[in-house]
Image (tube, rainbow, N blue to C red; front, top):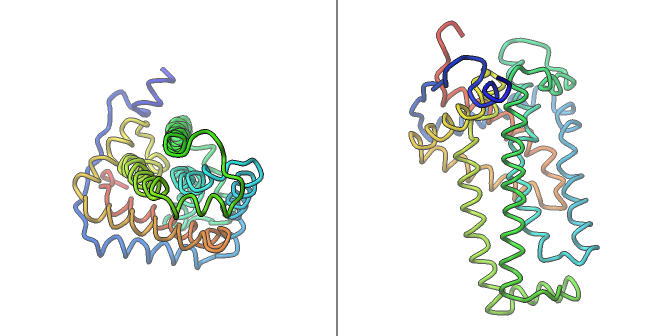
Length: 268
């Protein structure tokens, strides 16, 4: 029964929430509402999201010190695949603010009491598996092009990547593969985590709803993906510090995008 509850939610049947058609302007409106949520108590949210720049710096230092320079870019870019998981607390804050409830930053951790917590963990494990798969594919691509010998230094690695034909193949093919991973994750979970916080529909229904929302709104969802990608790049310069602001805004905006995309049941 527990496994079924994770897959199908608290009901006996798989739920199929309704999907709205939205415009690109709705995406930017969701971003505006996310900014308003962040602006309400930014010090709390920056404190909550310090994990992003800290994790980024740790990943960079670990990779450089362990002769793993070839995996540094896949680590930094692939970290975005886990963003929907790390932003769950922000969805909860936006949900509470929408309902007029207390939005103290401590309530971000109330997610652990959600009836859908098992489903949330299941989706988180799925994204973690995608992250690991991306790292393995990226490492395999580098090995195929340059062999098993790691670069001698950061400058040698840079010259290797931008100064050789293999390096440009690595850039082009690697980013194309990364784009495929990003599209799969975006379309699978664009509204999945906010939906599970709002309604215990189960992991399968959450993924199904995200896919249907993407298929019904390919252009707005693509624009949202570009906004997220651009925000992550902007926030990563310099040394990931900007993510302490960018990530909360994107996290809050994701909740409002969910509200625009998914029809609420009668009485809510």
